[in-house]
Length: 104
Image (cartoon, rainbow, N blue to C red; front, side):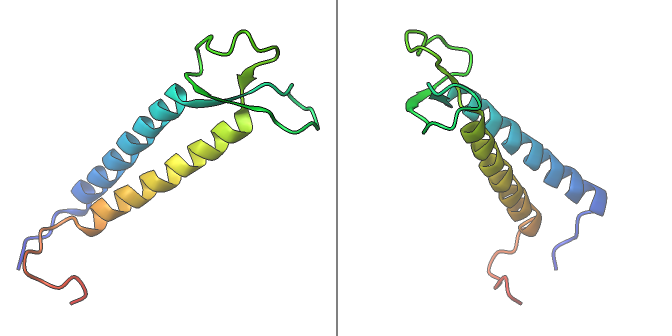
């Protein structure tokens, strides 16, 4: 039988992986932020311009160009979900089990 890790070590690994994945995902979202030309609060359909860093002037020639907060929030929610899934998989596979069926 393989030795079990103490609970505090397991949770440090879980939270460490969770925070690392979430921060990495936020960095990716910041570099590939969705841009729109529709003014905030408008009922008009959103005109999607593309992806660019949030601080760039890539779409500065388009009047009213801005980072689409709604789409960015959806991307951040997706990043949070996958961060939790990845951290959970690290928690589930916390000990090596070579040659054993995981359902036993």
